[in-house]
Image (cartoon, rainbow, N blue to C red; front, side, top):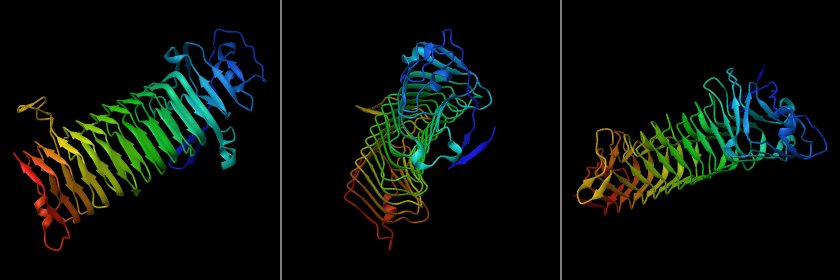
Length: 399
């Protein structure tokens, strides 16, 4: 086995698996509609696809494999019969279940990449010693939908420099030892209406462009929720991100021009961490029950708009809170030595931390105005230091 470095990830050379089915072989190289039940193995059904592409239908059943299935043809749809089509990766040498890549991967040119591959309506599971569930390499316009990917030792889904129009929708991505959905080097990405449960990290996007992540549910991740690095022009909106042991959303390594809006960010270790990010809008999110800062703006970040957010505990009216234990804190904003920040129109209520805390190194050019502070202390007055060019005023402070 050899390894090829591709961007920030490794490409393996895989052995084709042979999964025996209890059916007779009926191979016809000229057909584009293939019933995998007519072939001696799933790999044989994939290999029967003509170069012009086609559709492979996998009947209901459990298909155990010990080496990766490999798809090397574009303009293809691989379709199961729902969760009753179950591919089980028994490999314990760190190899993936399904590899989608050009057959001449070592010498592939941009114009020779695979195009238009769809995977739909099936379930792929692995084990703690197996590799990724689905590993696609240099595939443009890949579309995964109604796919369950669980219990893999690597990433659930790794779309490795699948540059053009990667789409993942209506999938269940759970209990993978690494990232649920890993997207290095992708462009014009849609991640919509998926459920992520108890992966190490839910979603990681790096060295990419134009992520549209909407309407997903992320719960119980062992580290972080969404990690975005060196990616611009993206939106993370309308998602539910709950109970990540680490941070719900991280922006790092030269992120710019991104929007984080209308998400519910609840009971995570920390909320949004802007480590190295510029030109970012953080708006209309609900930050409830954070252990660490709900929003942290680091010294390498600036030019940030923070407006219309609610930082709160579990208050339900009439002097009552629904949940109030030591591990259910509520936190506000932490400003490091950042600059050019507008914080307005937010509500901070009943936090265990300060509404705004300021590092020893004074932030500069910060506007803190028109916010409501209820039953909470704050250090925002410390922003009004001489020569800081900060403006603080018109805030409502209430018991």
